[in-house]
Amino acid sequence: MKKSMKTGIRLYRTRRYEQALHEFQSMELDPADNPELSYYLGLCYTQLERYDEALLYLEQVVTSSDNLLQIYQSRMILSYIYTTTGRFQLAYFELDQLLKSGYESAQVYAAFGYVEYMMDHTDQSLEHLQKAITLDPRNTNALNSIGFILAEKEIDPEGALSYCKNAVELKPENPAYLDSLGWAYYKVGKYSEAKSYLRKALNLAGGNREIASHMKATLTAEADAKRRSSEEI
Image (cartoon, rainbow, N blue to C red):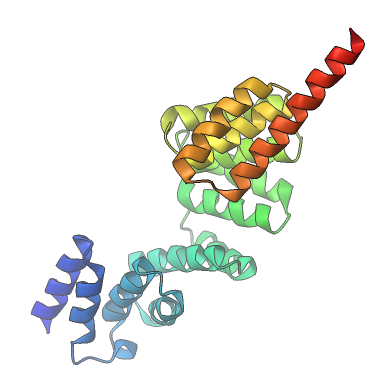
Protein backbone atom coordinates (compact mmCIF):
# COMPACT_ATOMS: atom_id res chain seq x y z
CA MET A 1 0.00 0.00 0.00
CA LYS A 2 2.82 2.39 0.87
CA LYS A 3 4.40 1.75 -2.52
CA SER A 4 1.14 2.58 -4.32
CA MET A 5 0.77 5.77 -2.29
CA LYS A 6 4.32 6.85 -3.10
CA THR A 7 3.81 6.03 -6.78
CA GLY A 8 0.59 8.03 -6.87
CA ILE A 9 2.19 11.01 -5.17
CA ARG A 10 5.11 10.90 -7.61
CA LEU A 11 2.74 10.81 -10.56
CA TYR A 12 0.75 13.72 -9.12
CA ARG A 13 3.84 15.83 -8.57
CA THR A 14 4.89 15.26 -12.18
CA ARG A 15 1.41 16.43 -13.29
CA ARG A 16 0.27 13.06 -14.57
CA TYR A 17 -3.06 13.49 -12.85
CA GLU A 18 -5.08 10.78 -14.62
CA GLN A 19 -2.39 8.20 -13.91
CA ALA A 20 -2.07 9.36 -10.32
CA LEU A 21 -5.83 9.12 -9.86
CA HIS A 22 -5.83 5.58 -11.23
CA GLU A 23 -3.03 4.62 -8.84
CA PHE A 24 -4.87 6.01 -5.82
CA GLN A 25 -8.15 4.39 -6.87
CA SER A 26 -6.44 1.00 -7.18
CA MET A 27 -5.50 1.00 -3.48
CA GLU A 28 -7.58 -1.33 -1.36
CA LEU A 29 -8.35 1.36 1.19
CA ASP A 30 -11.51 3.24 2.10
CA PRO A 31 -10.78 6.96 1.67
CA ALA A 32 -13.24 7.69 4.48
CA ASP A 33 -10.81 5.94 6.84
CA ASN A 34 -7.64 7.33 5.26
CA PRO A 35 -7.42 11.16 5.20
CA GLU A 36 -4.17 11.15 3.26
CA LEU A 37 -5.74 9.14 0.45
CA SER A 38 -8.75 11.48 0.50
CA TYR A 39 -6.40 14.42 0.28
CA TYR A 40 -4.63 13.20 -2.85
CA LEU A 41 -7.84 12.06 -4.47
CA GLY A 42 -9.20 15.55 -3.88
CA LEU A 43 -6.09 17.11 -5.41
CA CYS A 44 -6.30 14.91 -8.50
CA TYR A 45 -9.98 15.61 -9.07
CA THR A 46 -9.36 19.34 -8.64
CA GLN A 47 -6.60 19.34 -11.26
CA LEU A 48 -8.89 17.42 -13.60
CA GLU A 49 -11.67 19.97 -12.93
CA ARG A 50 -13.98 17.25 -11.63
CA TYR A 51 -15.09 19.47 -8.81
CA ASP A 52 -17.98 17.48 -7.37
CA GLU A 53 -15.70 14.52 -6.68
CA ALA A 54 -12.98 16.83 -5.37
CA LEU A 55 -15.38 18.42 -2.87
CA LEU A 56 -16.35 15.02 -1.49
CA TYR A 57 -12.77 14.01 -0.66
CA LEU A 58 -11.50 17.41 0.47
CA GLU A 59 -14.39 17.72 2.92
CA GLN A 60 -13.36 14.37 4.36
CA VAL A 61 -9.87 15.76 4.96
CA VAL A 62 -11.24 18.82 6.75
CA THR A 63 -13.46 16.76 9.03
CA SER A 64 -11.21 13.78 9.79
CA SER A 65 -7.53 14.59 9.25
CA ASP A 66 -5.10 15.53 12.04
CA ASN A 67 -2.58 16.92 9.51
CA LEU A 68 -2.96 20.70 9.91
CA LEU A 69 -1.14 21.52 6.68
CA GLN A 70 -3.39 19.24 4.64
CA ILE A 71 -6.46 20.70 6.37
CA TYR A 72 -5.35 24.24 5.55
CA GLN A 73 -4.56 23.36 1.96
CA SER A 74 -7.87 21.52 1.58
CA ARG A 75 -9.78 24.56 2.83
CA MET A 76 -7.91 26.78 0.35
CA ILE A 77 -8.77 24.42 -2.51
CA LEU A 78 -12.39 24.20 -1.33
CA SER A 79 -12.59 28.00 -1.38
CA TYR A 80 -11.12 27.99 -4.89
CA ILE A 81 -13.67 25.45 -6.13
CA TYR A 82 -16.57 27.29 -4.54
CA THR A 83 -15.35 30.58 -6.01
CA THR A 84 -14.85 29.07 -9.46
CA THR A 85 -18.37 27.62 -9.39
CA GLY A 86 -19.95 30.83 -8.10
CA ARG A 87 -20.78 29.62 -4.58
CA PHE A 88 -19.28 32.61 -2.84
CA GLN A 89 -20.95 32.15 0.55
CA LEU A 90 -19.37 28.70 0.85
CA ALA A 91 -16.00 30.08 -0.28
CA TYR A 92 -16.36 32.79 2.36
CA PHE A 93 -16.97 30.14 5.04
CA GLU A 94 -13.82 28.19 4.18
CA LEU A 95 -11.62 31.30 4.14
CA ASP A 96 -13.14 32.56 7.37
CA GLN A 97 -12.39 29.23 9.02
CA LEU A 98 -8.76 29.51 7.90
CA LEU A 99 -8.39 32.94 9.49
CA LYS A 100 -10.16 31.85 12.67
CA SER A 101 -7.76 28.93 12.96
CA GLY A 102 -4.80 31.33 12.78
CA TYR A 103 -3.76 30.56 9.20
CA GLU A 104 -3.02 34.08 7.95
CA SER A 105 -1.28 34.52 4.63
CA ALA A 106 -1.29 36.92 1.70
CA GLN A 107 -2.88 34.18 -0.40
CA VAL A 108 -5.80 33.79 2.02
CA TYR A 109 -6.41 37.52 2.29
CA ALA A 110 -6.20 37.99 -1.48
CA ALA A 111 -8.70 35.18 -2.06
CA PHE A 112 -10.95 36.59 0.68
CA GLY A 113 -10.80 40.02 -0.95
CA TYR A 114 -12.00 38.64 -4.27
CA VAL A 115 -14.84 36.69 -2.65
CA GLU A 116 -15.92 39.76 -0.68
CA TYR A 117 -15.96 41.82 -3.87
CA MET A 118 -18.11 39.24 -5.65
CA MET A 119 -20.50 39.39 -2.68
CA ASP A 120 -20.64 43.18 -3.12
CA HIS A 121 -18.83 43.86 0.16
CA THR A 122 -16.50 46.46 -1.31
CA ASP A 123 -15.11 47.97 1.89
CA GLN A 124 -14.35 44.58 3.44
CA SER A 125 -12.84 43.44 0.15
CA LEU A 126 -10.40 46.34 0.03
CA GLU A 127 -9.51 45.77 3.69
CA HIS A 128 -8.59 42.13 3.08
CA LEU A 129 -6.65 42.97 -0.08
CA GLN A 130 -4.66 45.64 1.75
CA LYS A 131 -3.76 43.07 4.40
CA ALA A 132 -2.53 40.77 1.64
CA ILE A 133 -0.24 43.49 0.31
CA THR A 134 1.00 44.28 3.81
CA LEU A 135 2.07 40.65 4.16
CA ASP A 136 3.41 40.43 0.60
CA PRO A 137 3.90 43.71 -1.33
CA ARG A 138 4.50 41.69 -4.51
CA ASN A 139 1.25 39.75 -4.37
CA THR A 140 0.04 40.40 -7.90
CA ASN A 141 -3.48 39.07 -7.32
CA ALA A 142 -4.04 41.55 -4.52
CA LEU A 143 -2.42 44.45 -6.40
CA ASN A 144 -4.54 43.78 -9.48
CA SER A 145 -7.75 43.28 -7.51
CA ILE A 146 -7.36 46.54 -5.59
CA GLY A 147 -6.60 48.39 -8.81
CA PHE A 148 -9.58 46.94 -10.62
CA ILE A 149 -11.98 47.67 -7.75
CA LEU A 150 -10.76 51.26 -7.34
CA ALA A 151 -11.28 51.78 -11.08
CA GLU A 152 -14.50 49.81 -11.54
CA LYS A 153 -16.24 51.41 -8.56
CA GLU A 154 -14.70 54.80 -9.47
CA ILE A 155 -13.40 55.13 -5.90
CA ASP A 156 -9.94 56.31 -6.96
CA PRO A 157 -9.19 55.79 -10.67
CA GLU A 158 -5.83 57.53 -10.45
CA GLY A 159 -4.81 55.35 -7.52
CA ALA A 160 -6.03 52.33 -9.44
CA LEU A 161 -3.45 53.03 -12.14
CA SER A 162 -0.61 52.70 -9.63
CA TYR A 163 -1.77 49.32 -8.33
CA CYS A 164 -2.46 47.96 -11.81
CA LYS A 165 0.90 49.14 -13.13
CA ASN A 166 2.66 47.35 -10.29
CA ALA A 167 0.82 44.10 -11.09
CA VAL A 168 1.65 44.34 -14.80
CA GLU A 169 5.30 45.15 -14.10
CA LEU A 170 5.55 41.94 -12.07
CA LYS A 171 3.61 39.80 -14.58
CA PRO A 172 3.54 41.61 -17.93
CA GLU A 173 1.97 38.73 -19.87
CA ASN A 174 -1.04 38.19 -17.61
CA PRO A 175 -4.17 39.16 -19.61
CA ALA A 176 -6.29 39.83 -16.51
CA TYR A 177 -3.73 42.31 -15.21
CA LEU A 178 -3.39 43.98 -18.60
CA ASP A 179 -7.16 44.25 -18.79
CA SER A 180 -7.34 45.92 -15.37
CA LEU A 181 -4.65 48.41 -16.34
CA GLY A 182 -6.43 49.18 -19.60
CA TRP A 183 -9.71 49.64 -17.73
CA ALA A 184 -8.05 51.98 -15.23
CA TYR A 185 -6.74 54.08 -18.13
CA TYR A 186 -10.26 54.13 -19.57
CA LYS A 187 -11.65 55.38 -16.27
CA VAL A 188 -9.25 58.35 -16.25
CA GLY A 189 -10.02 59.15 -19.89
CA LYS A 190 -6.71 58.04 -21.40
CA TYR A 191 -8.20 56.04 -24.25
CA SER A 192 -5.05 55.55 -26.34
CA GLU A 193 -3.24 53.89 -23.42
CA ALA A 194 -6.37 51.92 -22.58
CA LYS A 195 -6.62 50.51 -26.11
CA SER A 196 -2.97 49.49 -26.11
CA TYR A 197 -3.26 47.36 -22.97
CA LEU A 198 -6.72 46.02 -23.76
CA ARG A 199 -5.59 44.95 -27.24
CA LYS A 200 -2.68 43.01 -25.76
CA ALA A 201 -4.98 41.47 -23.16
CA LEU A 202 -7.40 40.37 -25.88
CA ASN A 203 -4.61 38.77 -27.91
CA LEU A 204 -3.36 36.84 -24.89
CA ALA A 205 -6.82 35.84 -23.65
CA GLY A 206 -8.19 34.71 -27.00
CA GLY A 207 -11.09 37.15 -27.20
CA ASN A 208 -12.32 37.09 -23.59
CA ARG A 209 -15.83 38.59 -23.40
CA GLU A 210 -15.18 40.91 -20.46
CA ILE A 211 -12.01 42.27 -22.03
CA ALA A 212 -13.87 42.70 -25.33
CA SER A 213 -16.60 44.66 -23.54
CA HIS A 214 -13.94 46.93 -22.03
CA MET A 215 -12.44 47.50 -25.46
CA LYS A 216 -15.86 48.31 -26.91
CA ALA A 217 -16.55 50.83 -24.13
CA THR A 218 -13.14 52.42 -24.72
CA LEU A 219 -13.63 52.73 -28.48
CA THR A 220 -17.10 54.22 -27.98
CA ALA A 221 -15.86 56.73 -25.40
CA GLU A 222 -12.94 57.72 -27.62
CA ALA A 223 -15.23 58.26 -30.61
CA ASP A 224 -17.60 60.36 -28.50
CA ALA A 225 -14.71 62.46 -27.19
CA LYS A 226 -13.45 63.10 -30.73
CA ARG A 227 -16.94 64.03 -31.90
CA ARG A 228 -17.43 66.51 -29.07
CA SER A 229 -14.02 67.99 -29.73
CA SER A 230 -14.81 68.52 -33.43
CA GLU A 231 -18.14 70.14 -32.59
CA GLU A 232 -16.42 72.63 -30.32
CA ILE A 233 -14.07 73.81 -33.06
